[in-house]
Image (cartoon, rainbow, N blue to C red):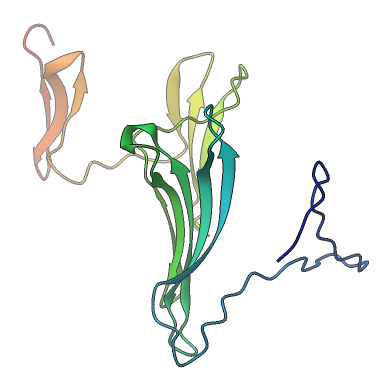
Amino acid sequence: TILQVSGTPLVVENSTDAASNQVAIFRSERGASSATDNDEIYISFNLDDDGGNSHEFARITAIASDVSNASEDGALVFYVADTDNSGDLQEAFRIAASTGGTVTQTFASNTFTFGSGADTDIALNFNANSADGVITWMEDEDYFKFSDDILMSSTERIKFLDEAIYIYSSTDGQLDIIADGEL
C-alpha cells in the first residue's frame, strides 16, 4: 500500500541515466499453479461525481489471454464509464496479440474523429513493406486522394447522388455505367 500526502502527486522515478528506464512493474502474484487464461490486472481511475461519491470513470486492464509457458499472449484494454449503461464501464479500445505475433487493435466505437481541428490535410498511411499506400483527406478541396489503385473485387457499386446512378462490374471483363436519366 502506498500512502500519499493530500495535494502532493505520487512520483515514481528511475533516475538511471539511460535511453530506456523501467519505472514500475504491476504484477499479480497468483503463482504458476493457479494462473489461468484471461487473468487480469487493472488500474482504476476514480473521480467524485456531483453527489460527492467516488466513481470509477476509466480503467486500463492488462489481460493474460494465454498463460502457456513460451507461448504467452496478452491484451491491453481501455474502458470508460458510459452514461447510457448506468455508468458501467464499457470497452473502448483493445490491443491484443496472438500466437504467431499477430497484433490487432479493436475500437469499440461507431464514430471516429481524425485531425486536430486545424485547416490541414489528414493522411492515413499504410506501412506494408514494399507496397505502401496513403489515403488523404484533402481539406481545402473536400475530397479523398488515393496514392494507389482502388479495386472493387466484387459486384459492389460506386453510387452517385442516389441508388439509381452507379458504376460497377456485373461480370469479369464488363463495366456497367447505370443512370436513370442522362449518361
